[in-house]
Length: 143
Ligand SMILES: Cc1cc2nc3c(=O)[nH]c(=O)nc-3n(C[C@H](O)[C@H](O)[C@H](O)COP(=O)(O)OP(=O)(O)OC[C@H]3O[C@@H](n4cnc5c(N)ncnc54)[C@H](O)[C@@H]3O)c2cc1C
Image (tube, rainbow, N blue to C red; front, side):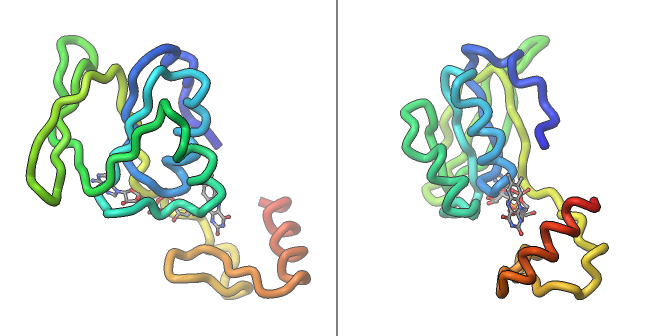
């Protein structure tokens, strides 16, 4: 469920902060719109699922910067640059960008599952049985 009007970013350089499923979803939607997408991730590797990551990681328009953080956003009336800190060597660089999307962790609404299914440490549903998959699909349809 995308909450942005991404077509405003046609031909632009953008930053997506985060490297989970939410971030990969935004990056994927931006692939044929933005000129360049920088993915800024404070961890040393992305935590998105393999399918979501594989859809974007080898695209020449995408640059994944692990162990980095946005420290400053610069510009007059609009975003024009962002300062990036490389967390391991403490070096900074400035990227020319037009917009920044922040996707650093939405909390999934799972209360309604109320112990019905097993979750992993990231509160993601663990698929253990075909019947469970059927139940999950039913629950998702009812949401
Ligand atoms: C498209 C999509 C597919 C999904 N598929 C499934 C599924 O198949 N099964 C399931 O159970 N759930 C699924 N989910 C739910 C999702 O996996 C979980 O809800 C997830 O933990 C939340 O994702 P997130 O990317 O918002 O946050 P997180 O997974 O918490 O990721 C946050 C990211 O932000 C980075 N970060 C944090 N702070 C900073 C900072 N200051 N600077 C830079 N980077 C930072 C972290 O390193 C991390 O990469 C899906 C969600 C989406 C949007």
